[in-house]
Length: 193
Image (tube, rainbow, N blue to C red):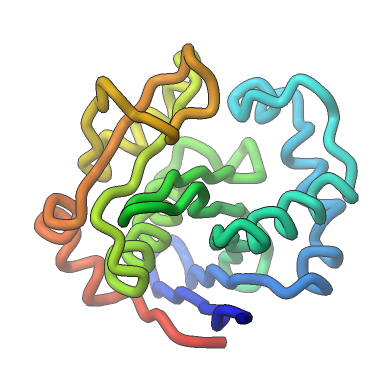
């Protein structure tokens, strides 16, 4: 059974943000830009990529996410692709979250926090997840800051939700997110595409 595809919209002072669950054609259309961002010398080590990714790898990643019940998003600011993010490894009311702000010059300016807030609003409001985990490489200080701003805490035993044994595992639950992001959740619009 095909799951409905969603979009998440949020009008922010930093621009109009729109996250969409893309179809295969939309992924293919943006695969070159995403591959370039994943392979960027600044981004690749923060994402844990040791080998360059081709457009076909990006397309395969999104297909695998969908095949395994994950939810992948392309994120646009004022109509331009700026990031992607996803919820993966969904089971027993929980999922893992990952994201990438594509343009290095746009990083560290609050965009990642806004994108993460949008996808978490979807996870907790639409999917009714109880917890969302993050697996963070120890040297990815910027990502850790994003998760701390969202209200995440260190998770000492993250069974099934870390990418590698050396990663830092963090978690946030629905009540914590709802309490600290009530105003943003009221502004974020979620709709079937």
